[in-house]
Structures are given as structure tokens and as C-alpha cells.
Image (cartoon, rainbow, N blue to C red; front, side, top):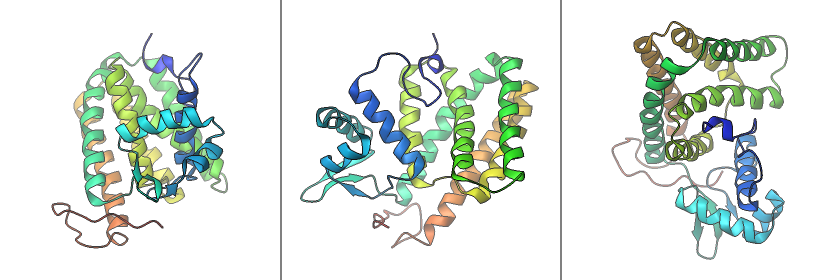
Length: 246
């Protein structure tokens, strides 16, 4: 069974799971919905209430989050969701690019025509909904699931749980950096459709070029938005200070 088959539609592990795994999945959903944001401080009790999970499971989850660099304990302040700075942006997108390029080399060979047609259909459905009326929170969440679902399928094609887990932790960092914006929804879907077309043609070189451009575009948008918000030096080669909580 592949890594992708071991997860349900919400990205949670399929089948019986531990309370810690459920807590981690709930934490992920809070990041996706924007209910937990970068730099935010929380107590263990607050996190327990937000996740509706026993304290013991939350403490185990916290250890996993700390190991992944998603949360840290600040003396006399509590738990802090990792703050965003320019170094985090640079590092997170570099990791994303490295893993996705490796996944693409495999996915362009093994993805079936039926899989790619279905993926294209879900993207076109998002575009149809976006053009047919108001951009709702539900649509944004569905678009995000379709967007990242393609990237995760590509990475999961490597059938390497270590890589897939590392990729998903890094994806949470990127989602903390920048939640999806309604104005970018159609742009992201269009970029994906061009990428999917290259995959259907089995043109690995074109697909790689489009992937690189897609990731670079996302990174540059985040950097441009962040430069006006982060204090201190704006050069990514300098040590940037941590952004204050909004």
C-alpha cells in the first residue's frame, strides 16, 4: 500500500489511530483554517480545548511539533507557534522545491492517465465555482485541498514515508507563512492546469520547468508580502529578526 493510500481525504492516517495522531490532525486543520497563526502564544490548556483532546495526547503531540520546528516552549509565556521570518521562508521553500522535484521525476512516469484526468477535473471544478459566484471560505478550503493534494500525490509517488512525513511537516510551515488568498485562487489553479497538461504529455522537462516557476512564484509573493511586515533587514542573506505576533 502506498503512502497516499494510508491517509483519508482529510489527510489523516486511515484506520485506527492514536489520540496523539488525532490531535496532530486537528492541529493541522486549525492551521489550514487560520484559527492558529504564526507567532501565536497558547497554553497547554488552551491547546487542549482547541483540539478537544486529552491533555496527555496534547503533550505527546507537542513533542512531535517541537521536533518538527512548528512550535516552541517559551519560558513564562507558554507555547509559541513558530514565528515567520525571512530565513524560515527561504528554508521552507527550498525544502519544498527539493522534495517536489524528486517526486516529479517519479510521478511523471507512474501517474495513470485516469488519475491525471481526475486531477484536472477537480481543478476545473474549482475554477468553475470561483467564476460562478462569491469566493467563500468553503471554496478556499476546497481549493487548498485540491492544490496541495496534487503536490502531495507527487511526493507520495516516491513511496517513502520518511520523505512524505518530512514534506507534510514542511507544508505546514508554508501554510503558516501564507494562507491562501481569494485573489490568488484562479492563478494557482491555472498554473496547476498547465502543469497537469505537461504531465499528461509525459513531458518531464516541461513539467519540471512549470513546477519550478510555480514554486518560485509562490515564494516571491510571500517575500513581497512579508518585506513590508517584518522589521529589520530585508535581505535574505542577513539574519532576520522574528516577526511580532499580529
